[in-house]
Length: 101
Image (tube, rainbow, N blue to C red):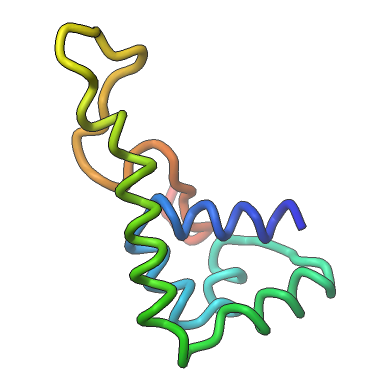
């Protein structure tokens, strides 16, 4: 379940990853080097179906905006605890396994 949660978390913070994942969860999982349990695979392929792409993308976009809100707009007069994100995806997302070293 931990890897499935990681995939869902990345879909929430990285719109490029989210598009790939919602279009083809199995291919994206392989591309990023995840090895899911049989249970995770079954849950993923049951929940993330191509016909639900629009609704899921919209829901994830709202969540993404909420997650980045404080990082992008720290309260006035209060210094941010960490450097703000200058563009999305910020430091929260994972790299693909086929990135050249």
